Image (cartoon, rainbow, N blue to C red; front, side, top):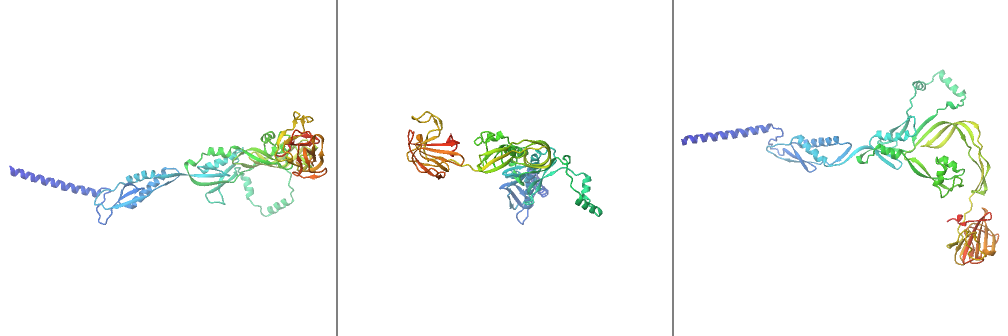
Length: 532
């Protein structure tokens, strides 16, 4: 019985050993045919651990495969994102010697690479176009949007839709820099194209040249002119640069159109030149006269206020950031006025003028070529004119001499009595004050307010000691209550020249200077004439 048990145990051990031996052999053989298994090789490293940006993403059996996988991962990320991107992609492979084992599947490794790379994307840049108009910059997404922006500016003044804007390479700049060209869409008919494309030869050449020599040009009738827009262009130089931009810096085209094409209020300084009138200025700048007066209330009281050469008017003109020029031919039947004719008088001052001939309007038919900046006519050329009634021009004689100026006749001082009605400060003093009083210590220097000729120098009743000076513009200045007179009658004095010392003589309530300005013998408020 015991012998039989020992025999069974021996058989059992043999079977167990055989099973284990064949199992190990089977596993080993299977491993030889499993994808990714690395057999034992005596020459050294046969497995490489792969890291991207310091993060382990798997193992490969060849470093070149890792580089290829990284390239595919980057391409996949780039393809999935719009525009141009920057990302970190540092590849590191570490080799090991392995007796047996597995390497990771390529899809697994590349998926891990994509995950790591996506977390390292620094900036996503979108291909765009930077538009520069004067000092304004805007970034748009496509070339079509750029052309849409410029076309919106042209379409404001192109009712017939005949003109289109194209981007072309700027021949003076790099290849990626563009500018604009405005073309007319009108197509030539086939007959005219053939007529212009066939050259004249033989007898036809002779007849053509002779015809040019002997034919007199016929005068055009009004119906012979083409009426409409001849040409259009953008007024400003436009620069468009193709580049890559962060998506958040690219503007919607509607926003760019609103900023560049919509009119903005722009203040403009206009300097008055010889021959200008307020009505002519209003026509030049396309702004009503009352609006010009409103914007220049410090200089103009009404539309009838005289204007002077050299004065500067502030005129607010509605202008878009992107302006358009155009040439247009038009026909008018209109009431018109001739330009004012000026006769220059060198003996008169610029604030003196006399109308020598009153104007009257005329009526005419005209064909004109007009040059526009946006909605403003900047030049007008008459191509044909037929007068129904001839206009009569206004003739104005005007002065050319700059009138003299007036300054305060003393330094310092405090106004103690103004011009006009007042309570008499002392017996004998006027209740209608003819000048301005400055309280000042006796002996203060008094100077000529304007250059001229001394007509009185001495005592004059209520004035006390005084000086009267006649000026070339017809005005007279008076200086009263002086303590000392330093000039004589007939003496020529210059503006600012010392003529007396202040005092308290005549009808006076204290030390002061009395100062008058008279126009044609009538006293006026000196403060309206004395420069500040």
